[in-house]
Amino acid sequence: RLRAHAYDCTYMRVLRLTAALCLAGHAHALALARAPVAPLAAAYGMRPRLAPARSAQLSMQAAAAGDGKGGPLAKLRAKLPPPAELKKVTPLGAMFFFILFAYTILRDTKDVLVVTAPGSGAEIIPFLKTYVNLPGAIGFTVFYSWLSNKFSQQQVFTGLVSTFIAFFTLFAFVIYPNAAALHPTAAVDGIVAALPAALAGLSAPLAIIRNWTYAVFYTMAELWGSVVVSLLFWGFANQVTKVEEAKRYYPLFGLGANVALIFSGLYVRFVSGLRRTSTAADPWAGSLKLLMGGVSAAGLVVLALFQYMQKKVMTDPECVPPSAVKQSKTKTSMGIKESAAYLASSPYIRDLATLVICYGMSINIVEVSWKAKLKAAFPNPNDYSEFMGAFSSCTGAVTLFMMLAGQRIFKNFGWGAAALVTPTMLFITGAIFFSLILFGGSLSPLVAALGTTPLMLAVVVGAAQNILSKSSKYSLFDPCKEMAYIPLDAEAKTKGKAAVDVIGNPLGKSGGSLLQQAMIFSVGSLAASTPYLAGCLFVIIAVWLRAARSLNTQFTAAMAEEGAEA
Image (cartoon, rainbow, N blue to C red; front, side):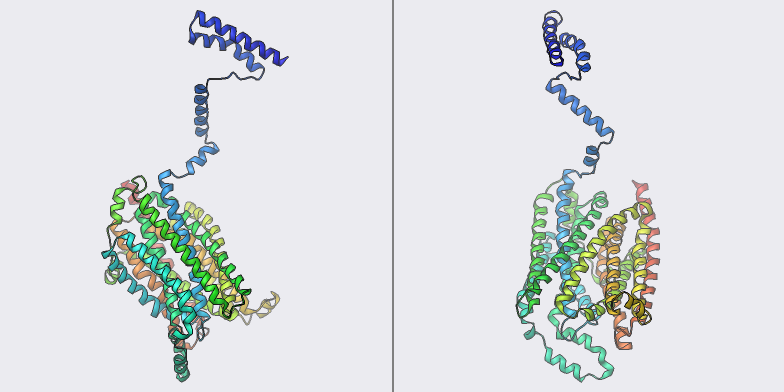
C-alpha cells in the first residue's frame, strides 16, 4: 500500500506541475506542485528530491550551522595550521627530530668511549669539559664569526653540518680501528708510574692524552649539541618563525624531540643486541660503525630538509615575509669580550645566563658521580652502551608525559612556576641520590631486603634522578628559556642569545667540572669528594632559584609592557 500511495503522489505531482506550467508560469508551478505533496510525503517519511544546486546550498548551510555549534569537524579544522604555516613548520619539526636523533646517539657513545677507555674513568669528564670542551667552544665561536662574515647562512649551515658528518664517519671507519697506533699509551703509562702519590690526581688529565682521539670525539659530540641544535637550528627557526607561531609550535617541536630520544635509544639497544651475536674480534668496532652510520644518515636528511626549505619555503612570501628573509641574511656576531660586556650590562640577560650556567653546573655535578657508579656496574662497553640506550628511551618517554604536564603548568600557574620546577626537581632527586651514596652503609638491611646491591641501587636511583631532571629540563626549562627572549627587542634577542650561547653554555658545562677538579686534587678522588659536591650542588640550586624569581618579575613586566603597546 505504501508503494501504491507513493506512486499516486508522484502521478498527482506530475499532473499538477503540467497544469501549473500552463496557467501560472514556472516559478508559481514549482510552489503549487510542492505545496500539497510535501505534507503527504512527510507523513510517509519521504523527502522530496531537490535540485543539485539547491541540495548543495542546503548542505553548505547545514555545515555552517554545525560549525557555529562547534561540531567535531569544526574543532578539528580550527586546530589544523594554515597551509602556509604547515609548509614551514613540518620540515622544521622534521629537522629537529633528526638532529636530536643523532645527538642522542652521540651523547651515549661519547660517554662509553671516554669512561670505559683503558686507564680512564668518570674522573676524566670534568677535565674534558674544562680543558678540551671549553677551549673548543671558544675556538669554534671565533671560527663561526669568521664564517658568518665570509659566507651566507645557507653556506655556513651546510658546511658545518657536512663537516660533522664527515668527522663522525671518518672516526668510525678510520680513526677508531687504528686507535692503538695513534694513542701514546706506553709513554703515558710511564709518566703515570713515575708520579709521586701526592700527584695521583694527574692521572685523570693524563688519560685525555692517552686517549686523545676519544677526547676529540667527545668534544665534537658536545659541539653537535651546542652548535647544530642551539646555534644553527634554533637560530634558523627563530629567523623564519613569528612569535605567535613560536608559541604554538615550539612545544610541538619538543614533543618531536622526545620521540627522537625514544627511537634513538631503541636504535642503540638494537645495535647492542647485534654485538652479542657478533663473532668479530672487536664487536664494539662494528657497533660503532652502525651507530655512526645512523648519525650520518640523520645528518644527510637534515641537509636535504634544509635545502628544501631554502628552495620552497624561504622563497614563498606566504611562509616567510620578505623582511624576515632579508633579516636572515644579516649577520650579527659577537666576540667573547663583547658578549661578556653585554651580559654584565643587562640584568635580564644576566639572570637568563645564570639559569643556563646553574643548570649546567648542577647536572654535571650529579651526572659525573652517577657515571662513576655506572662504570663500576657495567665495565664492559657493550653493557654500558645498552644501558645508556635504555636510559635515553626512558628519558624520552618520561619527557613526553612531562610535556603534557608542562602545558598545564604554563596555563594554570604561569612562567614563574614553570621556571622553578627544574631546580626543585634537581634538588629533591639530587638529595636522594647523594644520601644513598653517603649513607649506604646504614641502608644495607633495606638494600638486602630489596634483593639488590648498594652499587646497583645507586645506579638505578641515579638513572631515575637523571631521567627526571632531564625530562623537566626538556619540557619546562628549555621552553622557559626560549620564551624569555620573546618580549625583548630585535637587538636584545640577537645579542642576548649570542651572549648566553657563547658565555653561558661553556661556563655551565665547565663550572661544575672546575669544582670537581678542585675536590679531586684536594681529597684525592671523586668518591671522597662526594659530600662536598653535594653541598656545592645545594648552593648552586639556591642561586638558580633566586635568579628564576628575579627573571620572572622582569619577564612579567616586559610581557605586560608588550601587551599595552599592542
